[in-house]
Length: 294
Image (cartoon, rainbow, N blue to C red; front, top):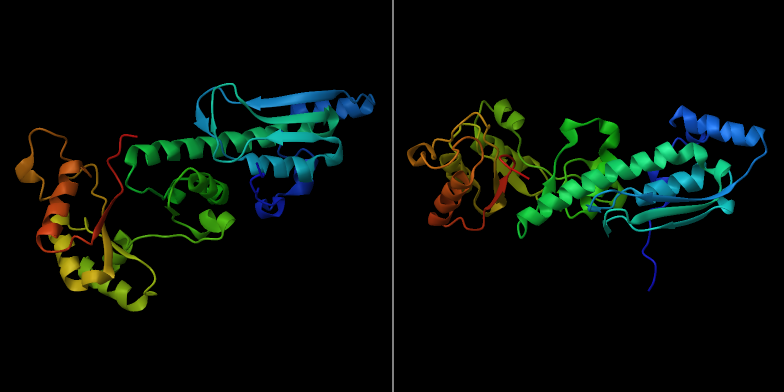
């Protein structure tokens, strides 16, 4: 069976010299390597890396890049690894390194940290993808974390099954770009007029960009969805429901009593779907971005 292609080490833009000198590594690993070198003691070791839970692997290509570019003697190492996106079992070896310990002792903090974060992001994304199937999932977490993690996290979500990410940085490792919707901010900039903001988007943005409009600005998703659909017709790809968890949408109020009515909830989605379908807008997709339990 042919080997899968791996991401080239250059894509990660690693601070190689700083990593080699141990700047980002736990001090005890740096001192361990220093001691071995001073003693001229070069034990050949086998390092096995594993997780303790069922997961979807991420960060392997980045971990290999760290070893390849930042070890002192890459040619002395033998490295065996699974692939990003592989499903792994508890205690399964995902990365095996053989060679003189001093050649890579200072890198353990780095490759373990990369594997831990990317695997967590990928696993969480895959859980959502599986729960949402056959509906597709987009990955929009950039505002909730430091900007420096976007590239690797976006790739982890991509290989886990997310069909889109929100920033160009998140999409950069596979040569794509960010996707998005008409946000609340743009609607507010047009005095809360969702239809006008959507019209301006349709007029001024590239026609190839899908127009997905937020419809909860006035807390009346059914009415706003219909107004936007009537105004834009087939130029409207979809509507997005993002009702605050502290609010009850106008269309849901008459149906309250047997379910949690706040925020984005199934009844609200069905209300919007039914209203659009009744007026012939079956082609308009619905995107939801809140109220999830996974």
